[in-house]
Every structure is written in structure tokens, then in C-alpha cells.
Length: 293
Image 1 (tube, rainbow, N blue to C red):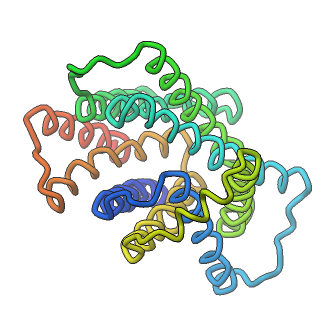
Image 2 (image 1 turned 90 degrees about the vertical axis):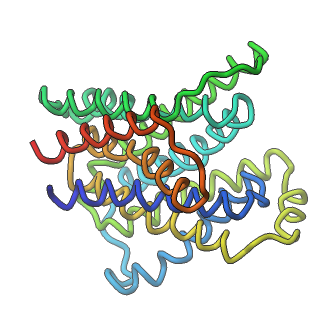
């Protein structure tokens, strides 16, 4: 197992821990505000991090590279996250979790088209095991009726979110390989935050967002969750894409679902049934094939 695989799996684990902390915080901060806060925090934290590892001299990005990284942030952070949260509101967490499994297939498809990546047969076996395990963990039987129009709109937003998120990371893949990692992440975050601010202004939400931030929140937990989600996990996530094929990294990222289930069991006391255990087993088996064979 190389560093790329380690970073991709570590990113999934850190992201899962961030999700658990957000659940512990009770999600008192609305989704848009939380998304804006965590990305602004990461944007600020990367300034001293870049100074420590690279200095403040901007690398020699071409105008095309600069534009691609910035647009990648707008697409993969501002647009994708907004559509994901919209899907979550329309069709619930479990259905959205199932739709989220489309992320790695989209990355594999786009990597084949734009990056000429190819997965060998044993990697495809690992991919199908991971996706099967994730679906088994997240799938639930729904007894409550959901409005069909609402479900269709949620599915469109969910699929669009996964497609734009995959497009954002595939766009920046070759630049990640050629340019300093931290500078590229900072520029990408700048694009994402700019997109979020533009959306907020366009929708006239400035006053509402400001009022939501002024309300009492468990800020220590919110800050820690944001640090893990948008700073540490983001660095590990894109470090994985820098070092290994995007298609392989995306499959390893899917293990965040398994980590969330295990951490929810350990930290929140949530139940783990036979179906979830079977799904975890399939996912672990797929990961082992991907990284060891």
C-alpha cells in the first residue's frame, strides 16, 4: 500500500469523524452556514500552513491552470455542496446516501474520458465490492410515502451534485500532480468560497445568514468538525488524488460510509445490524483487493 492509498483512506476516516462531531453538535447551525463557515475556516488555516511548507511566493501557475483550479472550486465546492444539501432536504439522508455512491462511478467515467485512466480487472472487482458494501450499509426500506415530484427533484439534485463534484476533482487532477498541493487546495477553496458568497448575495440571504451566525451554537464542536472536514480531510483527499489514479482514489473514498457507521456505533451508541456488518465486510474486502493485489 502506497502513500496515495493511505491518504485516500485517511481522508475517509477523518471525514467520518467530522460527520459524527456534526451530529453531536446537533446540527444547530444551518447547512448553508455550516458549509460557508467550514470552507472559510480552511481557507484561513491554509495561509500559515502554506507559509510553513512553501512560503508565500505564488507558484508559476499559467492563467489556464489558475482558471481551472478556481473553476474546480466553484463547481466542486459551491455548486456540488449546494445541490447535495438541496437533495438532502428533499429526499432525506438515507436516499441521498445511496445517490452519493454514484461519485466514484462518475470519477471513473470522467477519468477515462479526460485522463485516459484505465482500471484493470482486479480493480473493477474491488470497485464492485466496495459499491455493493456501501449500498448494503446505507440502503433502508422506506415505509413513509414521499411525494414523487419531490423525490424526482431530489434525485436530480443528488445526481447533479455527484457529477459536479467528480468533474471538479477530475478537472484539477493533472494540476495537482504538477503544482504544489497546498497552494492548489487554497486556490480551489478560494473558488468555492467565492461561489458560496456569490450565491448568498444573489439569493439575498446576507441578513438571514448573519442572524443565524449570531445565534448560540456549540462552537467548539463546530470548529473541530469544520477543521477536520474542510482542512485536514481536504488535504488528505486531494493528496490521494495527487499520488494515485483518480478512479482508484474515488473508490477508496467510498469507505467513509463504513467509518461513519462504525464511529456512530462507538461514539453515539447507534445500532449495527447484520446487514450493516455484511456491507462493512464487502467494503473491507473490496478495499483490500484495491490496495494489496
